[in-house]
Image (cartoon, rainbow, N blue to C red):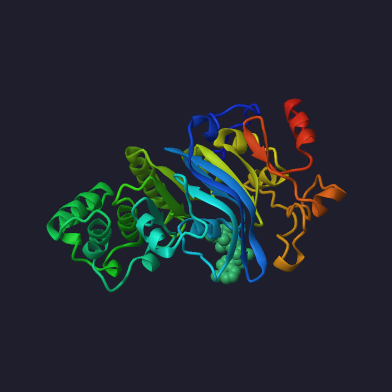
Length: 348
Ligand SMILES: Nc1ncnc2c1ncn2[C@@H]1O[C@H](COP(=O)(O)OP(=O)(O)OP(=O)(O)O)[C@@H](O)[C@H]1O
Ligand SMILES: [Mg+2]
């Protein structure tokens, strides 16, 4: 059941799909990942997991660290540019400290990538055919003819009309939506087990955003792959994601099944984020009060403490651990009070 803004209506705190850890060993397990850039912890002890065949929505305000996490997962942020501590395991293999040569065997082969802006991701100097064939030849060792045939199939499967003719086109000869489809076909060319899509539709016209999202989801499901979607749109996240991880200023504040986290948010930040959603009739818009603290003023404890309506003296000083309750994880010192209030059906 959905309310007007497309987000599932409030459900009991324990409702929703089984937590990923109950559905088999995770394909991806991030544990206490801290990433420092220029002396600032842009990611602060991030912990999340993703089961095989599941979709995870990464949500949070601008600057929360969503793209940083996505880039770190695919090895595009490495020492000495950044300093990382903690662990990111993909199918059991540790990615923190993994040599670039090894990352090259994962990136585009076992982990596919879709970025926000296809016009920046596609190389303007090479034809569509060259760019779709490249991973097929490099990772799957197809010969030129085989790669061309497979490229035509791939472009066709992402809804590019007259695919064979398009092989000779350069990116600038295609519309933004068509370029995005090409990038999706490249990302999925080698049937990756994990797709990471960072705001895959936000550079596109609203009219084709839904089509592209549907396309990605259909292809991911057909492959039985897992996906991480970095999204700003909570309604979209509730429709396409099994699980949600909410980030605030580099920290994970709440994770769990989408239906529970978005239908019945518990962390004060998730509650605020949900309230910020502009409803279709644009009658209600309650922005979160305050702004994200600057890197130099970041509280040592909970980074949301400066904006939290439930703040206590300990919050800014001591970092709340991410603890599991009622099928989700929450980082908040007030967790018990919030849960008690939720079970009584009153606002904390
Ligand atoms: N190239 C960079 N050099 C230094 N700091 C950066 C760089 N890119 C991002 N940051 C900082 O890292 C933090 C996280 O940024 P990031 O881009 O990961 O956020 P985001 O959640 O993806 O935001 P958005 O929703 O706007 O895409 C921000 O404080 C940002 O200013
Ligand atoms: Mg980003």
